[in-house]
Image (tube, rainbow, N blue to C red; front, side, top):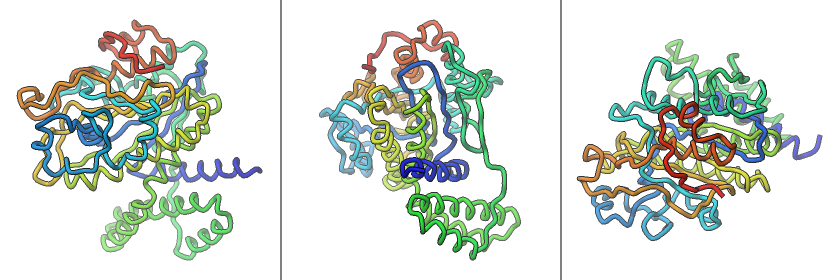
Length: 408
């Protein structure tokens, strides 16, 4: 077995363990279709603050709304918007035209600001809540319209498949159901075995993390609070150093598939719910996202030029910084785009301004476009779906309007 193959297997083992158990990275899904273009959708769970990631420093009132959060070391993008310092390593992609943003977008979801409902509508691609909102996801419906898509063209890794791929189009999923119990001596033995082969060391450490987490869940269920608290502290320290590795590993696994027959991949990254100390809370999620995007860029090679990455979140956050140094659930937000297939180095969308009268309910960024419109044009330009198919089936009720032209 050559070194590259062994490395891929090591990454796959690590992902198989961590993706199912981690609250930071959740299921990954793939689909193979008869097209040479690739689409990667990353769901940013927790409501990413688009005003922090792509900050409108050119707005005179921005710093008034955010006296603490506006003190970051932002990286200038276009003289008006600036990039969060925790994503600074993505600047080469911006300068190469392979990174872009869309501001003031949202799904049609309004006012209730529930993560669960918002994420359901984001993945379902529907305009309204309803009894059938969880019956199908927009990627599943998109696949059903592409000629030549086969029964095994998609699969999900994790404890449950993502709603974005659920539906009549058949998919395959894998989820670990077994409990992992391991003694301290067993952990030491496994650690020693992995140490002899550096290619498998990371996979082994991730497996141990999974074992510890499942053990903690068991102890919590049994009422052993003292042991559970100790295990929780251990996991917290382990996660802090592994979050970016998990996202990077997941992206590496996706890249391996995308370089072959797979044309679609989706996974999610959590940690964006930043009510308290947003300067710290958003750092981990941003670093994780940055690691995933850089890994895709590095490992896709020539395929990167045919790839569009869309990073979406369920809704934005309040314009005003709260008393805890964070922000609360809002409405309008931002979408991140990356890949060699996009026309980057641009912030797309109709910017509504931040004067109080221009805000939604005088608290949130006013949405000026349906996020589904941008995903719809990606389906149109990358895979040849018609506007009618998108408006009627993929995203029922969406107004595709004019093509924003963000793809090459």
